[in-house]
Image (cartoon, rainbow, N blue to C red; front, side):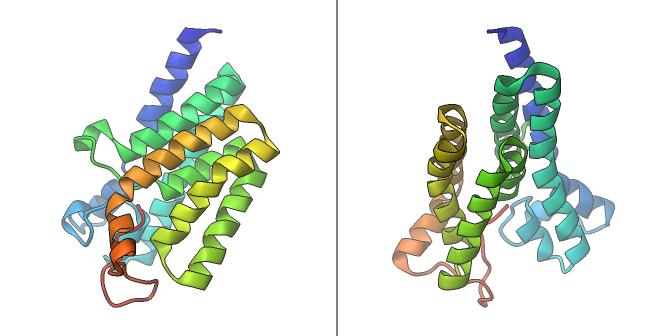
Length: 203
């Protein structure tokens, strides 16, 4: 095992994942600091609250893309094990970006982008689970939490232990970042998709 290559994959993945697309795009557009708006998150959902759907879409693509690019770069230069490390590190970089005092997004988009590059079948199952729960229950946070809960199982079935372990790490971090949403779901105060209150589930 080449620990130097794994370290390079981890560092490169983290730095790529730490690029705060939501913050950068909104500042370039002259909308100020996205952290002062809505939930304070840097993800696409909060960017959407500025009224700029185009910026929200670009943020979504950027946050997903950086996870996927980190995986692909590591895979083709350092190998499959390094790709897994880079994917997890990119996700951590989005959630805890060094440039923003380790206060980043909640990671759903980056999770999806990382999964897409690691195993597209598992990614599709993740997205299908999100969509089904979102349509049936109309809670974006619950949909993300449900998809994250089953992702390690799907990964084990379709890939094996290594991807399943990586997904388990991502899911645990995602659950931690959604701890406030979990509390609101439990006490019945979480806002549904299309509701009047501010939704604070994604990022």
